[in-house]
Image (cartoon, rainbow over the protein chains, first blue to last red):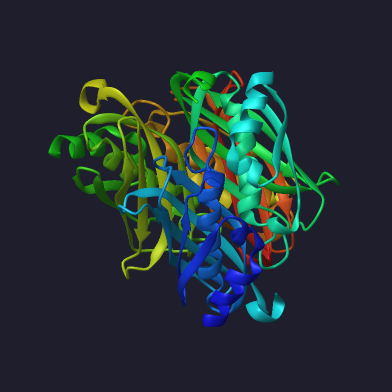
Amino acid sequence: MEKILDFFNEKDQFAKHCGIKVTEAAAGYAKGEMEIKPHHLNGAGTVHGGALFTLADFIFAVASNSHGQLSLAINANISFFKGQSEGVLTATAKELSINPKLGTYNIEIVNEAGSRIADFTGTVYRKSQAVLCSL
Amino acid sequence: MEKILDFFNEKDQFAKHCGIKVTEAAAGYAKGEMEIKPHHLNGAGTVHGGALFTLADFIFAVASNSHGQLSLAINANISFFKGQSEGVLTATAKELSINPKLGTYNIEIVNEAGSRIADFTGTVYRKSQAVLCSL
Amino acid sequence: MEKILDFFNEKDQFAKHCGIKVTEAAAGYAKGEMEIKPHHLNGAGTVHGGALFTLADFIFAVASNSHGQLSLAINANISFFKGQSEGVLTATAKELSINPKLGTYNIEIVNEAGSRIADFTGTVYRKSQAVLCSL
Amino acid sequence: MEKILDFFNEKDQFAKHCGIKVTEAAAGYAKGEMEIKPHHLNGAGTVHGGALFTLADFIFAVASNSHGQLSLAINANISFFKGQSEGVLTATAKELSINPKLGTYNIEIVNEAGSRIADFTGTVYRKSQAVLCSL
């Protein structure tokens, strides 16, 4: 698990570029965070939907790959609840369903006060290769 | 329209940070692009789902705000069709439906060969303020 | 609340046609069920995605209208986890977010053994009329 | 193709129960219709979201199974644009992407005047069995 954590924090260039870090991972589970910086903002001065999606999507990737089997996102759905301009956002993944070929995860993003900022549901296709070998 | 284009290319910090540019806009329509760079890649070496979503989401924002009425994303759904590691991606928005309070848009992302890379559908809530005043 | 329950069980013709009943409701919450009958099945002999969606959508309508303000569905997303051919399915709604104009709800469908069969997330636009007056 | 059409019109019990018929099918394509009857209405007197979803979902099933390989829905997303109380609704499927394991389809529902009533995007998992053998 430690290896998977390091792997994702090291190898995911776009997550690095966005200042996102995974902090916890276990089978079917992951948690991570992003501190809002000026470069995360949209024209309205709140955190960009793309930054929120990227935070959720990265934690989704860690949770879905946590079983060691390479898992690629098929699709995702995100709802945005309120604008946020500063502070640390936390994303937590929960496994809704898994079978040999498909897995579905819910990722919730909250602010430091614990208010829900966005809610994400995504599905992966699970390949037969192992994560660490194939990457 | 020129003003809305400049406004989005100038004021959206996260789109700038991701190297995304809007190139065309008209009422209910927008088009833009992102050249894939190493910082857009995920751990598997293909463009990150978060980067694809950000490209679509930004073009969605331009198209939905093109009528001059401030429009905020409520939610979005994205399907990923194939991994892409280099070249320029183009996103094109189409207005599916609009009424005084809500608008729904489809955004298609293709690579230079014209192959579909991702498909996005998003809905905005239209506020009563004007875009340029309120921002 | 009793009135809202009766209202939905009486007035929703399609829910009746599909054999769906709401059994509990409270502010931001609802629960209901559907017993699988032959007319709910698809060509593969399992409960049709449209029947699962209808069950979730109806419980979503009750939960979102439970505050007494008329609420109309804008969109919804559903994931299907496993085929089911018989027994009673139960759907439970949870309010993820609410503001004066919009509300988002998660609805989970489980079988009698408690296994997750489908997961639904939907968003409503909240009008200014009251539910019972306007309908 | 004729066999697939008959198969779906005959064997899908829930589509029959809802009065939905597929009228055209070709590789990656299908078209069908539903005449709005009182039993399709919700408490507000407009066609139920579940009936619209069922119409789209059935046409999605025909289009995705049209290649002869058994295809099961993984998930779907639907946006509702306007209430409709009478007339015939037509749903048309378009294939957005296909590979040996996954296929994604867009289904558009219009009324007799050609106005968009709803828009649906769904993804299937393609099994190795043939449709007609396995069903």
